[in-house]
Amino acid sequence: MNEFFDALETRTCDQRETEQMAALPAQIAHAQRHSAAFAEILKGVDAASIKSRAALARLPVTRKGELLERQKASRAQGGDAFGGFAALVRGPAMSRVFASPGPIYEPEGAARDYWRTGRALFAAGFRAGELVHNSFSYHMTPGAFILESGAHAVGCTVFPAGTGQTEQQLEAIVDLKPTAYTGTPSFLRILLEKAREAGTDIGSITKASVGGEACPPSLTAWFKTQGLDVYQTYATADLGLVAYETPAREGLVLDEGVIVEIVRPGTGDPVPEGEVGELVVTTLNAAYPLIRFGTGDLSAVLGGTCPTGRTAQRIKGWMGRADQTTKVRGMFVHASQVADIARRFPQVHKARLVISGEMANDQMCLHVEASDADDSLRGQIETAVRDITKLRSAVQLVQPGSLPNDGKVIEDARSYQ
Image 1: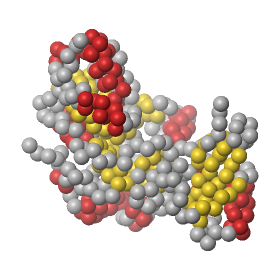
Image 2: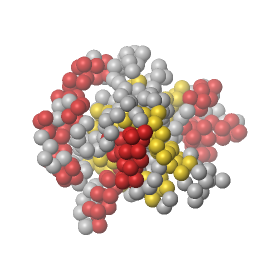
Image 3: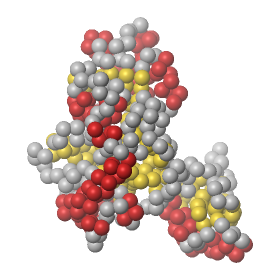
Image 4: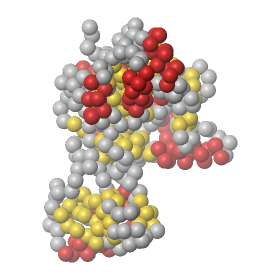
């Protein structure tokens, strides 16, 4: 049995990097020509010069909030519902349109396995001829279609179960005997527990690809006790597949159709390998050419390659949200402001704003990793905090490498009791 979805998965690391960097200038030029939003965002950028990660890192990050605001502004003026981000036009090239909370509207291209999830399902053990019970929602949002298209790419047949109607779903599983499940891990657990309560045998399902929410190792282990091998798929409505779990259970392997960076939250600055930061993705999808799209999710790069033989870079998986905006003494404080403070001082390696105290008695302390630190530097940083946030804060100088590696730039430690 073939162990890999295609030959791309086993390219050498150098070959993959060379080929992706070679494709990058054309993708950026395509976005500038066919996406009105990126024509504006990347105005003045010489696409031909963006052929390395260092060059890519100089481009602005576009976060989901900005995409939503551009869509709203365009719709308010009677314009493009996609805010100028899609490079498709309605017709045969655009098979469907979806709505995610916001609402954010996403196009689906007509290409086979448009979302590229076939790779993730193959790694989870899905094979041609099997029946997949798909419990992602088929209503407005793209989740069900993202996984259905991948199942079809592998050669599977799909039962479109959708969400809810647990008793009817159990009946269908008994009658049809699917071997695989796609959906959220929480609904899979509900199905298993309801089946046990009812004395219903749904043991035909032996594997699953889950997403849409966290699936911690403890839950994966519980599924194993129920006779299921469960693997995580990390995909979004904007980007399609980003990363997927393999039988090695060592992080998530990046998809072949994306270029991923980990940046310090609130900035576009890449962090060193292993440090937690925001996942920023550039997709090589010509239909929806998102360049440096900030997912808002925290993760970190794992060193080395997957023991299964897949050679793409790996990430640790979902580690929280990068948007750490909070309100202090009636004023919003953003992660980008903490980054602006740190940039003013070359001695500063990293900064973390800790907010403590009880309600109506907020206290701020900026913990700063710095070399050659002294009281003069502390005073200068205190002044910078006031200039940028309009709030007073204590400053604590700490040794480089002593702050937690959890991606937090703002830590809200206040008591709300």
